[in-house]
Length: 86
Image (cartoon, rainbow, N blue to C red; front, side, top):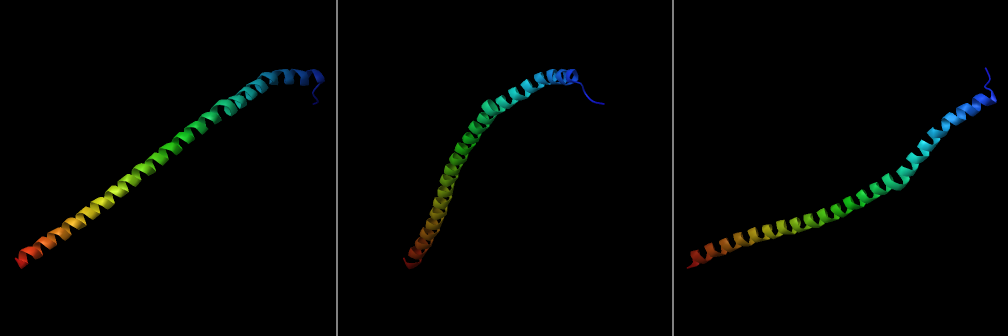
C-alpha cells in the first residue's frame, strides 16, 4: 500500500506543529534549563568551598582543644610534683 504525494504532504503538514514544539523544547533546554543547572552547580561549588573552610576552622578548633587538654594535664602533673616536693 503506497502513499500518494497528497498523503505525504498531509502527514508532513501534521508533523509541522510537532517539529515546532520539539524545536521550542530544544531551545528552552539550551537557553534556560542548562544555564540554570550551571548556575545551581556553581552555587553548590561555592557552598562546598565554604563548608571546607568551616570544617577547616572546626579541625583547628579540635586541635586547639586537644592541645589545651594536654597542657592542662601537664600542668596538673607539675602541680602535683611541686606539692610532693614542698
